[in-house]
Picture 1 (cartoon, rainbow, N blue to C red):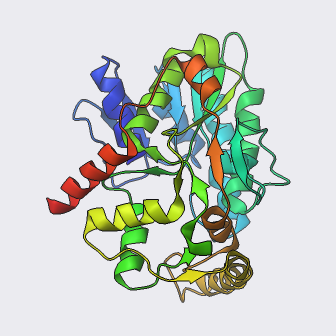
Picture 2: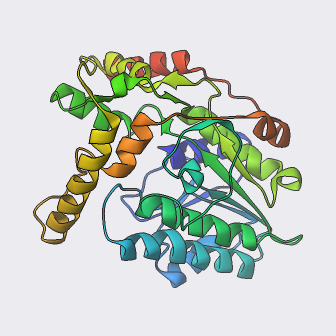
Length: 318
């Protein structure tokens, strides 16, 4: 979803764009050159970046469970491989798409900026591996190879399989609880805003290189309100029962361990209904001061949450 939106935005600005994906190959813009491969394959990575002036790195293993080795291979080693290949190919700019979870340590974030990525304190394999990868990326920043980290927070929109579809499926099955009555205040980012900010990171590399910038809609909402909006847009009943956050965090840790063990045996192939990381995200506030992001990128989000939900509803009607 986000990669296609970024490709569309780049093509609209007149860039020649090559998309490097594992497959099946898909991108939203017909003008995009498509190359198949994995960031775990150094040869494929080298071919993908050949002749490119800039790289926007969105590839990652995104999951709430799984073995550390898989996250390390894709998110850390894959990033190191791509950084080296981009430098060798003569690229001068590199945008690393990160996550605010690299600096979320389980407690509330209330109006703060982009904290420092910390693999030791981040929670969950995804956040820890992305934190390590972000540190690698920013350490490579130099006057001749400029690197910026853009951290879009909770990206959603039509065709979103990471958040929207999981919310809708669980709500339809009656398995979507609110934690602490859905009162935690969180920022989110509509997909078009996230894509525009990532492209601005490339365009404003003089100002952005060496920095990590959190990107959101700048419209904090109670998580229960956001879940209800997504469910209503999809035509399903929003969640109506609540679970204490402390109970969900404890139970999520147990479920996560059981799910990971079952996944190794091939007994399950989907995401668990709850993990400790997910419980923390749903029960703690996390919204961010966007003033530095707006100043550095010279950018403001154009699509409000309300407009995004209208677009999501139109998507489901179609």
